[in-house]
Image (cartoon, rainbow, N blue to C red; front, side, top):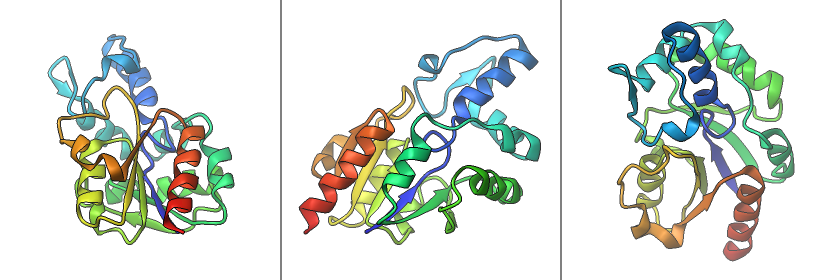
Length: 188
C-alpha cells in the first residue's frame, strides 16, 4: 500500500517551532490550542506568512522538532511504501531533505505539492493535518483513505464529514498506525 505523509504538523512540529519564534521576535506568547484554523493570524500577520519566511532559513528548517511518536510510527509502517508529500516551497527543499535524512532515513521519496493539490499524489492513503488536503484527496477517488492528524487548526469548514467512510481522525501517531492497519485489512 502506498502512503503519503505530510511533513508540517504530521512529522515536524512546525507550529510549536514558529510559536517560539513569534514569542522571541514579537513578544507575543501563544499555545498550539490558540491556533484554531489554518489561516490564523497574530498581530495582523498570518501564521503561514511567518512560517514561509522561516522556512527560507536552512538553520531554522534543520532545528524544527519532531511530532511525538513519528519516528517510531514510520518504522512500524515499514512494510508499506511510505513517502513524503509537502507543500513547502522549493527554497526550503535542500534543508528539508537534510532534516528528513537525519530523522527519517527510510523516507527516500519526496513529492512537492501545493496546498490543495495533494490529490494528484499517487497513493492509497494520505496522512495530513489539514482537512482541505484530506477532502481533495479522498474526493478524487472513492478507494482512497485520508488520515486527518488532528490539531486545533485541522478543521476549516471543508465538509470532511461527507467523506466519513474514507477518513480517520487521529490525534497521535499510535492511532495513525492503527488506522493504517485497519484500512489495509479492509482492502484485503
